[in-house]
Amino acid sequence: MVDIANLAAGSFGATAAQNQSQAATTVLKQNLDSQKAVLKLLEPSP
Image 1 (cartoon, one colour):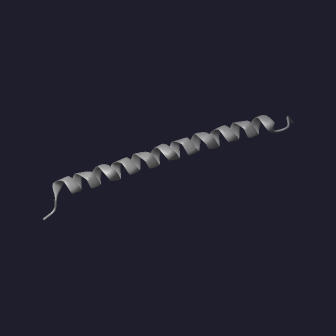
Image 2 (image 1 turned 30 degrees about the vertical axis):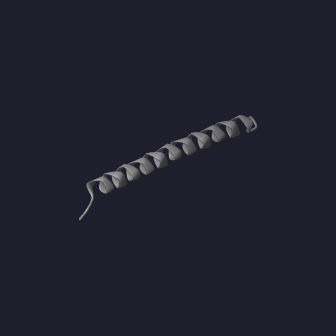
Image 3 (image 1 turned 135 degrees about the vertical axis):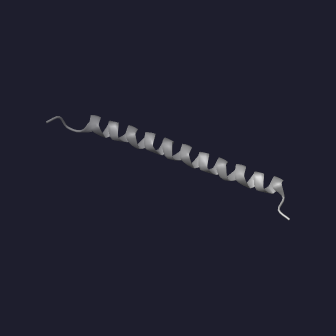
């Protein structure tokens, strides 16, 4: 027999992992955007 508490815990765990992954992706994109801005500043002017 399936335990409802185990199902709920698994569901919450999966949701937490997905949220953590989305947050990590957002931070990574922000870091890349920042690096791109710095590189633009370092480019020589035409």
